[in-house]
Length: 302
Image (cartoon, rainbow, N blue to C red; front, side, top):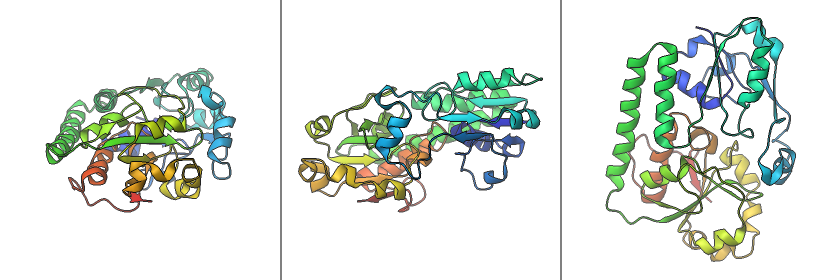
């Protein structure tokens, strides 16, 4: 089977199910697992986030309306050359990846119509459900079931390690300017890791919030995991937060519990690595390890 993934999380899923060798096309943002860089790229970004600030990026993609219909382009000629049997996409967020509508338009231009599979999880259980869905599409349902059992066992191990511990109040931010709380599966990751998520409910597609809302929440822990930003990229713009009035009085700041996390790897993308995200958070919130030791590249205090 010839697979084109137009969603970084779907590329993670393809790898999880042992079909990376069938991947013939990917997005420009697919950066995992190692070796995926050799797969042809069929998308491009219309906004250069390497040179723009968070506010400039937000304004370019529609600001608080969270519309990004022209944020990505698809190389339809290259897509046709690759002749995929299966195209993986999403219809959850037009800012985070190529939208289903745009993919459907591109596929209609192809002579042979590949199957288009849209993955749209909002909750942790739905992320794991995508493993099952893709496993069925790839003809490996038994392997998918085994992987779901393994991922579920890791989440259970995190819950067991933090059981009975005090639950710190946690704010997670997935964008800096405007401030945007992390929703969808992130509140559940926080809960699994022994924290109490604030300002966003499980499964919620969030909206911008005011700084006053963060101050009023008085988080014990502040997680900063901007969508698409590495910790280094986040650190370069961190003064957007520290310059806000009342920053120094936040409980999380006063106790040194502000963390920069690798959002794209473990929190922004609904793939199997969200389980590692929960393991990282168990380290952040309670200092416990339930997997490989957490590295500074995964999480570091400010």
